[in-house]
Length: 142
View (spheres, rainbow, N blue to C red):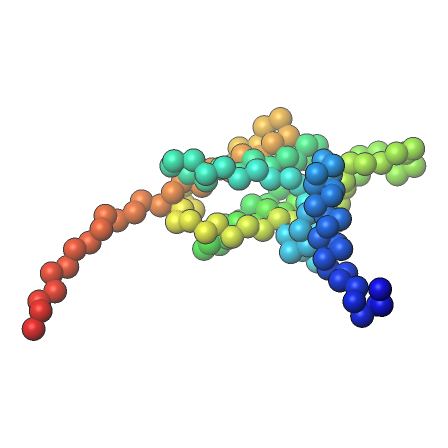
């Protein structure tokens, strides 16, 4: 194989899939900001009346979390400081800045969004926007 035939991006994606299947979390590159170091895992649930996001953020304080909803996107940012000296024998818990952004893609009412942080899990409820019923308009045929 010559260097010209090497598909580096394909290889990176294959490694990412292997990591996910092994239980590791390799976040997609586009989900991290320039300054982000890690990305918390997120579950997104589509319920009848709302979208629900469950974000694992153990060890953070509420004031360490910044949540914004802009039109059709949700952005979650923050920072987990290192709590112990970095001279540990094995350090696996991610520290530093994180950032996750999601395109919502469904009509939600951001004014009614709620976020509850309990036991290291942030739950974000995005109620669906009230949809206007189908409007009918009689169009005269000329």
